[in-house]
Length: 114
Image (cartoon, rainbow, N blue to C red; front, side, top):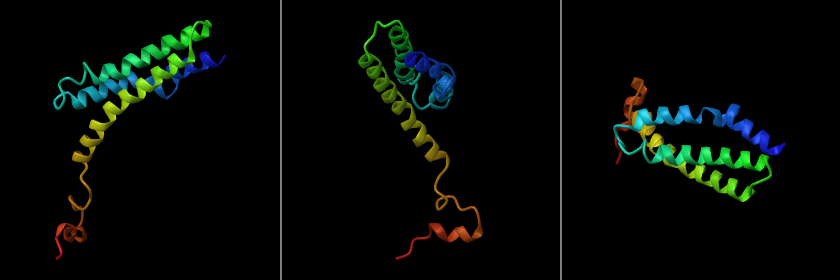
């Protein structure tokens, strides 16, 4: 029923590539944050595994949906731990157009006016 559908979403839905996405983020952030793989990645993959186990137990009628909701909250927190540094890294790689003029018309963008 409902729990089977949720577990299926973990396997073929948007979360199905989360492990690969975390591995890619690890590669990007490894130099800046040597502890990334040990802490932040675990903060995502641990709750993901716990959520899958919890849903499996719910399928068998031996769970509390509150436990699964806690796992989801932990997963969201772990994703924030990854998305924040990735967002900063992207902002560093892609400065605003005003800071990196692309055309001659943009050259005046960085000049200060008093």
